[in-house]
Image 1 (cartoon, rainbow, N blue to C red):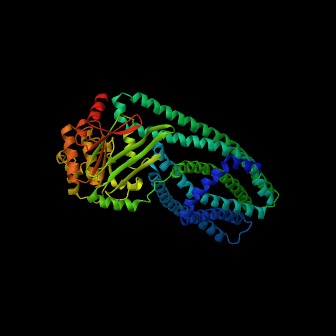
Image 2 (image 1 turned 120 degrees about the horizontal axis):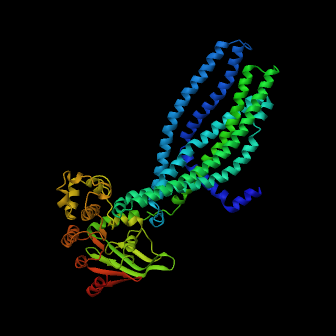
Length: 583
């Protein structure tokens, strides 16, 4: 009792219960499928016990102890064996289908929860780590949910059935068969603690390897350009070696534990066999009964070892559940203003949308302000620019507009002219189309990339936005036009072409506010001006917010705000010139 109280104080028992309750949610969701799987496993266990009992009658019939019904016994023996084969085949087929279904649904559920997590929180995790949690950890949990309970039930049936049968025939044999249980139980408690530590280390290393592999292939061009292949390969081998060392330490511990457990089991097995042989020599049992005793004793030992062997599975599932719970327990994005935002978007097609910041304070770390008391305003039909040295808060401000970050004080709002303001959140993102610094092109065709923001868009609508973005001039010359494959990260196109494709996709979203974060930096001045004029001409009420450094952009702007030294201020032409001369 004192140990339990101590664990509660340390929070270990609370954590274990939380992990079990979290997994129970999925057990409850798929209980019909799991019950079906349990039923099949139980039938296999019962038939396994039946085989041992029937084999006794068959041996006795053959040796002449009981010759009555030898044909019936032989037929029953064959029938049980054949039935077991078919049940195992059905169980294997069903388990595969059920496991795939449950695994895919759990992964999809966790995947969606991660996507809906507040960006400010999930951004603290590396994408490779998230990828491993969604796939590796979720797969481990799903597999454990499907197999753990059925294995426990079938093992308990084998154990209980064998124990009852042996006890009915010879209680002493049952006691001998279970003589090693206390030792195995006590050793398993020590093994559990050690294996949990090792398994957690193993999971974290697998996650680190996934992160490294993903970053390597994402930055392969950079690695080649700087001749870093040897250094990257060296680090890859170092991670491999570290992973192998962890696996070998775990294997060493498990092998040592297995040797001790196996030796105990072997001694018990010899004792059971010797006791059965002695009783046969004394004429107290038949050959068939001896065969059954030895088989049942083996089943008892095997079932008990099987129950202990489920501990590592439970540990792996618990650690994986803990890692997933860490992510899915992060705050979710709020969509409570979704209806109001959609209504505002509909009105915005005619009236436009104004974006306002009032007395905003924002910081990433305590006592380290990006800026304080910041004001900003962008109205329908305007192009408003943000300037400032790198790292001073331009991209941060754009993320505040998108509801990815939230200010510590002050307000960021959107509204139709003359209408009620709505606080910026994840719900209001439908009002914005966004082109980030690193243009995000996905594998697939140009048309598929365009339709990511508007699946129902026609080919003509796609061509129209490509023309507005000054991209149709090179797309129409491609062999397959808008059906041309983009390749991963848009590798087949230049930076300027990718920027224009990204802007075309943002235009297709048909949002009343467009945000460009250095999104025209790779374009020549003439194309940049033509593109910005096209955007306003196409939708005169559209609000355009641009983070930029080039004078060609500022000439088209209604206002320019400078972010520097923890302040946001509106600057005139003289202030713009001074900034450009300084930076």
